[in-house]
Amino acid sequence: MGFGASILVWLAIGIAPGDFANSTDPVAKQRVDLIELNHFIDQEGREVFRQVLFYDWSPRHRRYIVRAWRLVKSESIIPRRRWSPAGYECVWHDDGILRHVTAGSFRETWTQHDPERANRLLVAEEDRIPLIQPRQLK
Picture (cartoon, helix red, strand yellow):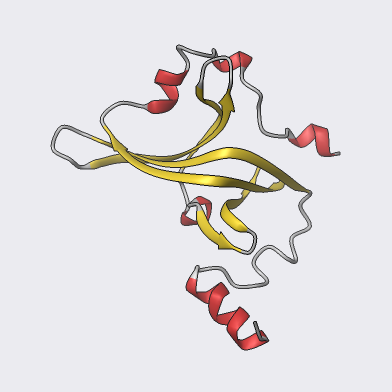
C-alpha cells in the first residue's frame, strides 16, 4: 500500500496519522478476547448511553467475563476494524496514558439491560483482571 492509500485509510476510519503518534503519554497496549460496543436503550428505543466493554474468555465459566468498561464520552473510543493484522482496536486517552486495546472479535449490541452489571453476578467487579493501571507503567 502506498503512502497516499495509507492516508486514505486513516481518513476513512476518522483518525489522522499524527493523532496519537506525537503523544507524550505512556502507552498501555493490551489484548483482550472481545470488544463490545453496547447501546443501552430505554422502553421507547431511545439510546440512553453507549459503553465499550472489554472481555476475556473464561474456561471456568465457559463464557466471556468483563475485564473493564468505559462510557463513550468521545467518539475516539469507538472500536474500529483493523485490517493488518486483522482484528479490532480501541485507542483513547485515559488518566494520562494512551490506551491501545485490541481484540480478535467484536460485537455491537442494543439492550435494555446493562451487560456489565449482569456480568458482575459471575465475577465481582473487585475480582476482575483490570486493564493495565497507570501506576504500573511508570
